[in-house]
Length: 350
Image 1 (cartoon, rainbow, N blue to C red):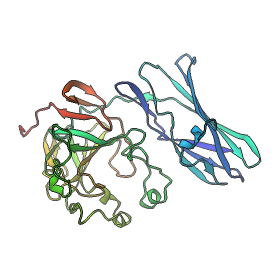
Image 2 (image 1 turned 135 degrees about the vertical axis):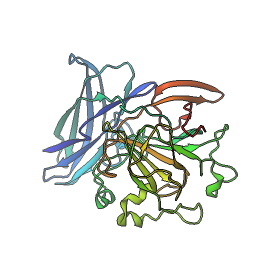
Image 3 (image 1 turned 60 degrees about the horizontal axis):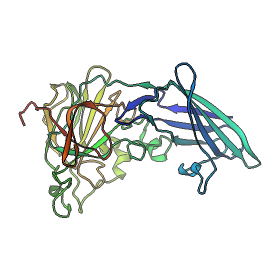
């Protein structure tokens, strides 16, 4: 009665420092003639021997009930509802194989009238490309891809997403990188101009070797307090959201997109073979940047801007900054709030 589609079809396990993360969504289709309301979502976690490891759920108990952490729980007849998986992390030492999800639905006349089940077998994704951070400066992951990040929360059924043809979330594992000083400040003064931000105009480098397959370099930069991105432009040119950008084909099924460059600063062209650490362009403020100066980075499985899916990315040879302390990381995952600094010597010697 209620059809469940898992998006994307390949569910990956991302390994962090303390936890294992799952980044996927559910599309629920109500094929009945009744309005339905989600009562409970339960997941049973099994190991490779089909032994139960854990059980979790959100339901109507509590005041307010945990089910209301979902923004929408009602599905009109013959309609759909997009749900972000609410069980998005597990302990690092939990060796799970399968996840059995059960959704329970109430109708206007009957509690738990319907239920639907789906089984997910996630796999750990090992990044194929040797990646470094794309800047030499001290960086903060201003917004990454954890559960509350805007990159993570893309409803493919939203009218705007449908209008511009978004078929997949290429930014599912994306990062917005901002430059910070040693105090963790993003800008000097009040940060009211582009030039106040420490990252504006800094050099950006190739995170991995490959071939440049797409370049846009003619989008004007936004100006803080004067001229910001016009979202009406998205309906005319959906790619304008990325501003000035490049896409690198790493020749192994993985592609890097780096966006929001300074207009006219891109130093590579389509067809160029580039090396890891090679200078690409300068951080700018073009495209849908919101109100923070940054570059956007994502690893994905294709070139198409709105038809590719994001992939987990692990970076090598960097320091994790913890106040006055540093931890050298040979290879690891980063996410929202992390402060990091590359140890890689770039091609231009900077």
